[in-house]
Length: 601
Image 1: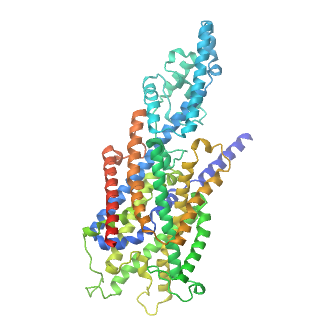
Image 2: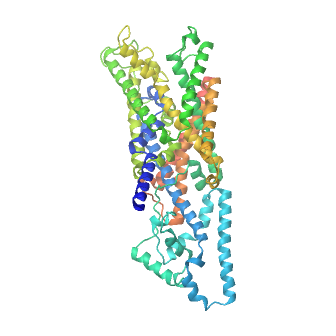
Image 3: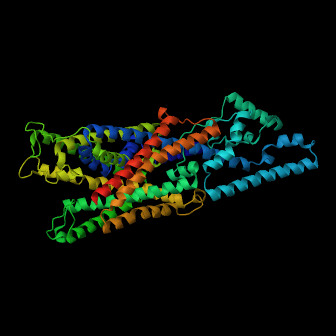
């Protein structure tokens, strides 16, 4: 009967774990929702000014580099998990009480020990326990080790121990402190020489040799999840963690501010409330009147009522909403591309030189003067790296993480380029900075407009607003989690009550200020510049530094650095090339921003 109950309990736990994880398609949907934000709507305008071939080259390079740096973060997380697990094993080691475990060995040596040796043994036992307490005190103080601490503590001990020891450790069991064989594996880890341990040690030695087990870190993603600012702390120290948290906060707050403003402006333009606007015309690309501003604030309040409660839920709880909105994204983009292609063969415009189909505007293939516009738009439209570890945590089968991310970047690349080429060719110099605004007067080539044309117009023009309903909550989760891990030390989280409420509090801190800010000021130009600068750090520079440092540390500790997620792009030369690319991207972003400000004056 007990066996049946245990089986049922295990099945229930397995089902609960399954409910908390994502299938590859669900993880792919979340990745798409993170990547495919409102940045897509700026690409046709950028394509027209940059030229079709130059735009293709820049978009391809940015997409490939973004895909590579996404996996840099995942590889760094896998290495961090192994390093911190090794540290935990070391702490458990210090707790082992040899007085109970090695009775036979002590009885055998009892007659040969004098009182001085007994005192030395007690002193050694005291030193072991004291070392453990000191180590735990240091861990609680520092939360986790910095790279310097790890190299100092492990490079001269564990690495040489693994080389010199006669005992062989299992990589799968030794990295799992909860495994039932943990104590069996871990006791011999106390000793440098096996011949002094006694018969039990000899039995353990034979057990390991017969099993042909070797200690070899697997560097796999398992149960543990690290926020990226925690990875920065492990591999770059406290200042690295602080710098990343500041960059993340500035980037996402700027994005959330823009999301809130674009949502309310779009809805106010398309669905004005006559009792509030009092006949005023509200246009998104023109300054709002006082009445339109009142309508705008009302929609911001409604947006907050919907988006904030969703943002307070975990990603797993948002799964159905996010998958549904992913499908809507694909439908809306397909409608934009399809109606543009059909218009090329049915609707001529005054600015077209050719009088035969397809009706397309004049275009350039390579316009170096528009390179900064296309580069900035491409970089901003492929940023998702701040949420890499959050998405990876939810994936049920971690071996498919690379395929999921690569598929997401390939999808967005194809969508971006198709949309950019088609819309820039048809609208030409009339391409709006937000391309959906070109559908405000859409009639399907029929006057007056039919019902199906009106439906298409609303689907396209409301696309940014619906897109934001998806992007806002998941970005709040990312920022809220990052702030939570920054202000709440890891060593104290297990002892705290109401952790769920504290996480919600940090998400509210992330969500409310940008909404309030967008009520006062719709757009702050400096936020766009800050987003560009911090985006370069988040997408390229910091992932490359994490990859370089984590490889360096693991090579020092384990004499091994490759993970199951590594490939040729993980090589040192590629890492340094990506880091150089990130620095170049940063320089281009800063100089282009300065140039634009000078031109305005």
